[in-house]
Image (spheres, rainbow, N blue to C red):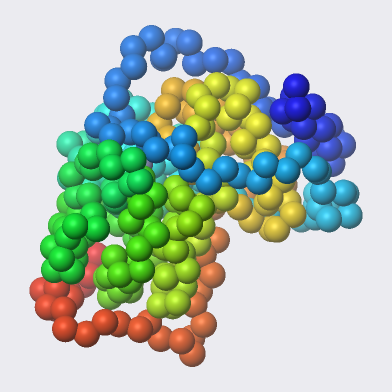
Length: 316
Ligand SMILES: [Zn+2]
């Protein structure tokens, strides 16, 4: 009931702000495509139940704290867990607009989907598996706290080399690894060398990934909202409302979603109408502040991997 009331208030607020436009938050269920469930990845989102929840406050900001509807606000939507299920991945890559696609390393369809997404004008990221508090097994290319620095860096480079058009990285799972200073510094140091950005998926409220990246002057940002932890049109609509509410208040917001039929159906319906709501969908790089010019990346010394892999950067 609380959720229903809160949602109604949001819709009312948005309908007042954007009259006569209505927020299309209730697409029909994707019943035609949901007949057979094909796993998207061997280790698909098993830890999302333990994630940091978005703001649980149901208090709505007053009108005065929201930006006027005439001002365009920007959102980025990262669809991750791509690379295993080809059909779902193709549907995502062909969605309209500037979505950002995050592909799992060494995944059987990762190269094809990254190529297709790139052709479709989507920004491509690597979705790197990292060890989690539940100790669930990791997909190929997973980074763990059991690795030496050399193993860690080599595994990361191997993943980066396995998918084309990579411009940045976010974590798949990682509720444990993102709490550990040393592996996070190895990760961010390598990404800095390769001039890649990092988005913290925030699978743990105790993640220090974003802070570590920021301290190394790496371009970085944090996920605000998970769109589809609950795979129903209503729940996805509620999360999307929350995304827009953050964007209206702050000027921008970042969501992460997954290639579920319900998510694809929702985005198919809602993305073409964003402009009418005063919302622009942009690649996530446009929401990542440039690090201050005065602070150069602090690079760790003594790794041979950077030289070894420098040709990869030059060939990008
Ligand atoms: Zn993931």
